Image: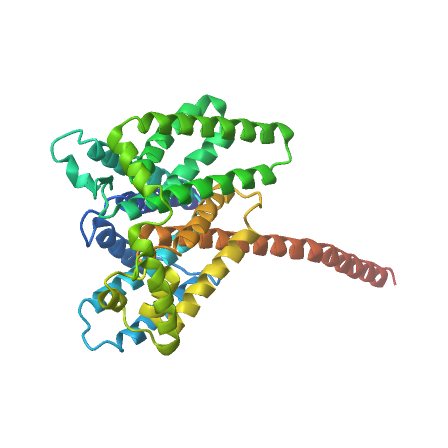
Length: 437
């Protein structure tokens, strides 16, 4: 008995230590995703090692996560088939290796959040820290606040610790929406705790001068506010959402007016705020290439090979659907479309259910919708945070499946217990009758 008594605390301590180490390991990986100045970035190297180690020591895929793995692998098989159409492979094998690696990160995040729901909080906290840090670098770089700050800008736009402002801006959307969620639903006493980092992140999005990032954050904020309004039946809470939304809009409008007093900001904002740029509507601009590409896809069911489209027409596809057809063939396109539809349908089913992880899934879901819309104008197949979004939603899908399975199991046990009691009573009655005879 004493041996058992001594073993239990040790097992509990070991389990807590393992949970702490795993939380720190995943949090560090998410933190590194905000610093991608050079490739391969520390994120790729770290996550490759982390996934390998986790696979050796107990990474398990539930039946809920397997469809995500199958669809993403099939998508990349389409890319390998498309590569066979190329006469010169160039750097294509490396490109597809990165695509497959990013697919594995989505599956990894889905699997670990399903097994440890507490990781949602760790992931979002690490993401907020990364977003605030890289936003500060981008803002300071834009205003040339210190010598060498230019390395955090590209094309006179804030890029933070990223290579492209058009990736830097969308990267900030999820932590910004999460902080907005906390601001709308959290304690009034903690509003400044959420408002200060949110202001920094919104500043990073603005000074990235990415039209896609502006639209993404704005649309996601509207979707989040609408979802919270519909989810709550409290008139007081709904009034709070309306009042705070109006206050936030007025504050952002005032901040925009102040920023536009700076001539360089006003000039770049005016140029970037136009819906169609010269490179969009030119003779072989983005929109013209869409038509050419989709017609070409009808003739090339296996695709033309990753990155070949840009070599032929001078610019990449800038459309994830066209890119799927050109770089991954019809097989890749169908796999990607199925994966997106499955994610949206599965995520929507669990969107308003009262669960501890529901706020995180809700934030990821509204931002994913924005990314899907944004994919119509830009390639997102190599965006690291896009695969994190997928993993967060599929992790929630897996958690809901486990939750429902546990409810059914409990109900089945409850139904079987009275039957057992009745059977026992019958046997006892028979035995007593026999003994009486």
